Length: 226
View 1 (cartoon, rainbow, N blue to C red):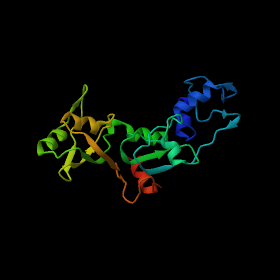
View 2: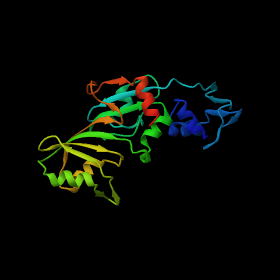
View 3: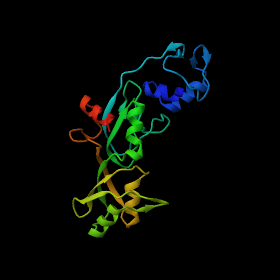
View 4: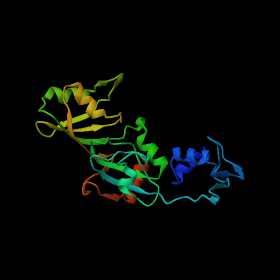
């Protein structure tokens, strides 16, 4: 596999950070300077800053993200999720939840698991509770459920249920950028509150806003087998 993927799978750094380390001439493979996109084997002698790489223990966290935190590993971005959680080891967010939204996001150093969760062909469910700026009728529920054209993409049919006059629960199996906000806008509604409450079988129940917990072994196994 490529060096970037290996380092990500080992929980050492992200693929983009691996590129930076290569550019800074800090990675040596079998005694030679690593080059961008280099293919490596697990058995290869790989050094970072002249130290042998070690497989890191896999970390799996469920975080209840507050509004105002940006789901990026880029430390240059103000109020980024890495600085917010301030975890002592390398982890990254699995996917994104926009800055104006709150709720469940998974954090890990397991690149394979993250890619599996994010792969749209697996149609993993993500559930949200959404409040819009005015009451809606049943035609809104029906239209959202059938799928909406946003830009040049038709969203997949999804489950939408009314919670109250201006609030609904929606389950998506894809992750287009700001999808729910854009879908709602198509019908003339503006999202004023959006909370993700579930990713596959992981629920936000019991996690206060701004807090997090480790996933259980059972939860990790179930995610890995999806």
